[in-house]
Image (tube, rainbow, N blue to C red):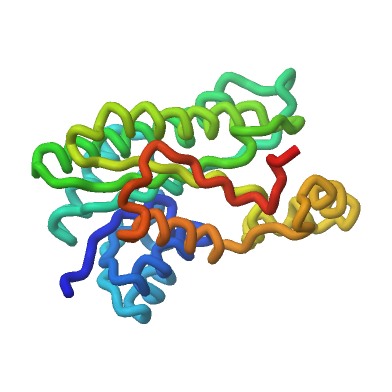
Length: 248
């Protein structure tokens, strides 16, 4: 069988890298991006070990020119790209009263505006080729429930989840499906410091009925499900992966 094709943004480490490798195991060839192309070497090696072909791409989602170059590079390396996974993001812990204009613009520009314009580029690619396709965007439970010091990040993630609903409606006529995943806290190396303090860890876990955090491979498994034929009738949906955090 012919391998499928996907483009995963923010794939140098953590959740993005796990998503890319899981998709490779499921039969995808991949373009993977980072702001620094050399940081993708480890992910590329893992994709190839899983049987996939990997195209490393430099991408700053805040730059329209960079988005255009990255989409061209992905298409040149893979041919038609059928799946986009918007994973590139930046987090910020800052009290709303202390937030600077630059901090706000960086978070919204990366997590919301960046996700939209990469999605727009993918949509144009698919419509021009008259091909169906799929976009999966990483949201967050911060976009569903309130927590102190997470205003900009929460607003951005709420925005990408509603963007998913809006575009699923608008692009259905083109055969393009859009879904989102809203993880709770995920165990990754970049977030280890925030839960190193036992008291802070217990405070966070107290809100989670399953009493543990998610693993990156569980998020990757959710992406693989939404990218599979089993999910072919799902669009405009946000799959919440939170151990029960949002049931309250």
